[in-house]
Image (cartoon, rainbow, N blue to C red; front, side):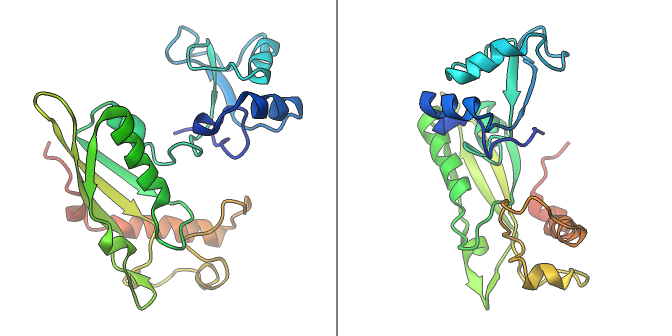
Length: 223
């Protein structure tokens, strides 16, 4: 879990630059939260006692993960789903949910995460998304796809990847608030709308629950 702040932040991960960090800090255009670094002995502390020092580090684009305090965000400018860090840890079973705005069904964020895992770690991820991205009468074909991970090394450790996509297949139970389906472009609504109402939240919650209703599709590891 993370504090959302990727929309505007001097530390944009993959997109970070000294110039943008200076301007965004100067005009206080930044989100996120400063907390104690879990790699250091300050991880139980809520915020820096001397915030000015960290503000200056932001101003010159020198914030990094080795400081006593780090600015927590949600990683939206690098990997929305957390796949990159799970692959770094060589997990044997990974289950991720993709709720990005994706009306065209390109799975761009997921594809970018796979590409970065291949470039940075030499990890191969093979997954067939045709059942999710193919359309049948304006509906998606499936909610879930299973893939396989091959980690580099002498033993070539294998892993399983379960990918859950926010999609409508037509088999959803009754009770979805119709306003979401007709007015808002559910389930690919823009995060520019920062004021989701109860009907929208309930629709996403129910869709997520329905997507994993059949546990056999998750191929949960034994034990």
